[in-house]
Amino acid sequence: MNKITEITDFLAPELDVYARLSEIQLLNREYPEKGLFIAESPKVIERALDAGYEPVSCLMEKRHIEGEGKEILKRIKDVPVFCAEFDVLTQLTGFKLTRGMLCAMKRKPLPDVKEICENKSRIVILDKVMNPTNVGAVIRSAAALGMDAVILTPGCSDPLYRRSARVSMGTVFQIEWTFSDADSFDVIKSLGFKTVAMALKDNSISVDDPVLAEENKLAVIMGTEGDGLSDKTISECDYTVKIPMYHGVDSLNVAAASAVAFYQLGNKRKSEQ
Image 1 (spheres, one colour):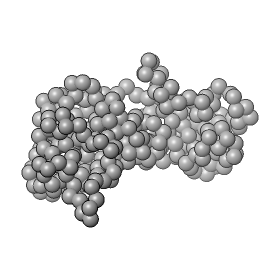
Image 2: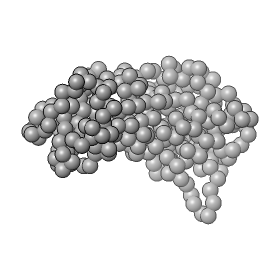
Image 3: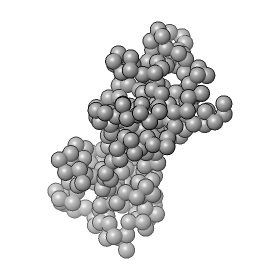
Image 4: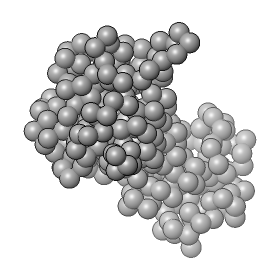
């Protein structure tokens, strides 16, 4: 049986994780083994549980106890559950909850880049993509469109931030990912990956160029919102690739561009050649 407690005291310390701790505080860089994240919505929580993440507590709208959250509660029977009416939760968290349910979960240690890239043929590298919505959307496209793993540079937003995980629809728990370090680019090249810089340059080839599909291993690199990839990064890549544009449009948002690139370059398209 779940231990369900109705909220009567907004200052209860058990609610700090939902109402008063920032994403950075939850991440806990000083003691990463104590790091937490918040999964939002039954679908995201379900996929996190499927991936083996350990729940710590749950906060939910009262009506969902016998509604959309019922199946989740069956899976977390020994975890404290806090509930309240909709207006109370909005006041507590400062915003409306998606599907009326949050779950605090323990983070897992991240694998290193070599471990995550071995035996893969298509990976994504996100370089300083800071918007959590874009990170979540790119990861969702990567999972759906035939990419094997996602590598993020330290300047990227964390895929387990609440908004990133929610926008990804929980696919952050269905595709492997990790953060890179200073030597990661060399590691990726040493594993036989040809690197693809997505950039609108005069010497860029089209994303549908047959030479790309013929490569056994590709690492597709996408840059930050606005500035894109640095000239240094582009010069170090094997290919510079663009998505053809029409009607005077100069570029696509990184999330939209990722969907086009992954559809064209992902494993499914490779297998069709």
